[in-house]
Image 1: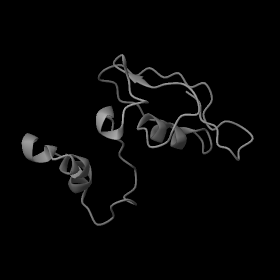
Image 2: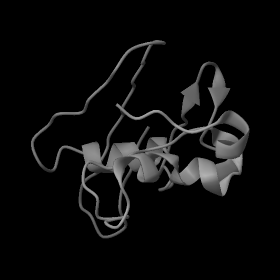
Image 3: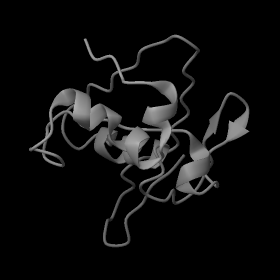
Image 4: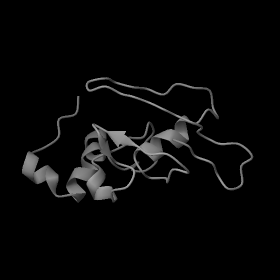
Length: 109
């Protein structure tokens, strides 16, 4: 997958090929400017790819609309919802989708 910004002289993410197996926990730890803060929003489809595709479990997820992609992202800081607890922040999307009531409360440890 690739991401190039219109005003940039170089790609922010260039030829990234990543495979994450079921049950793996992955963390991006790179120096500032290496593309991790561009990669995660592309995987979550908050930002469009310049080229390439994203697949999870043999299913393309770079094309479906947000409700159909079944991907979420949690930010390290609380800048988006400073008034919410961790549990409230984690369950926010589920509440919007009406899923929290069907599945019960989220356990946060």
